[in-house]
Length: 226
Ligand SMILES: C[S@@+](CC[C@H](N)C(=O)[O-])C[C@H]1O[C@@H](n2cnc3c(N)ncnc32)[C@H](O)[C@@H]1O
Image (cartoon, rainbow, N blue to C red; front, side):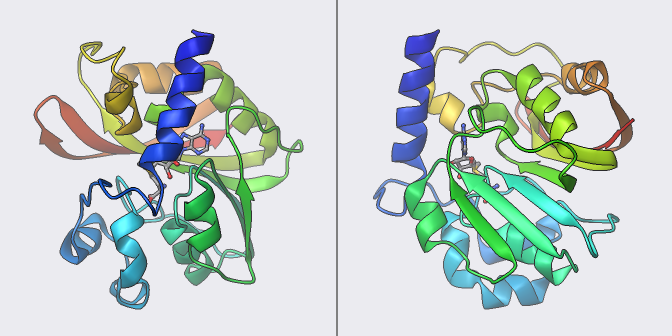
């Protein structure tokens, strides 16, 4: 397990790097708009979008104004700048990729941390919103991360999770590091995601299911800390 963990974090760093010549480019500008990203944000930051891998626009129907937001597995920070545009007061973003953090989108209201979200601990009740857009499936110990998120959220804080989910248990590529990096190896069922969050003291507020590709569905969950 420890071996797999170390290998995975090495491969994630190798995969999500601006210097990776084989980095997949999964989305064109239109697909960002289809995901719900504001057109002006995409137009302004279009040079960054080849390094962005969101699952869905996180903030649809969510009040972000005035919030302190933690963006876990932020990548180059497209959601961080979108949050600032939606009125977030302060965004802290964390990513294991040094190049994504250092060369990503910069703004005075966005603080950047290079680090492994499985290892960093945050202060109790310090955030209004925690976001994971395409990073939950790369995490080995999901329960522990959800528990840490609960600790770091203020009362009635929001947890937004967007990722690929299945209807039925999926463990075909559970040992495939490359599949883990691309959110498939660690994919769980929709029911399991809800069960983990509820076990850790969250209430499901909404679940938006988007298109299905083979066994995988893009889903955005919105949970509230009880
Ligand atoms: C699919 S990408 C999504 C990036 C970003 N949220 C976006 O929408 O563009 C997954 C991101 O999670 C980061 N990541 C994966 N595992 C991580 C970990 N354990 N700690 C910190 N970042 C991690 C990767 O470096 C990558 O930037």
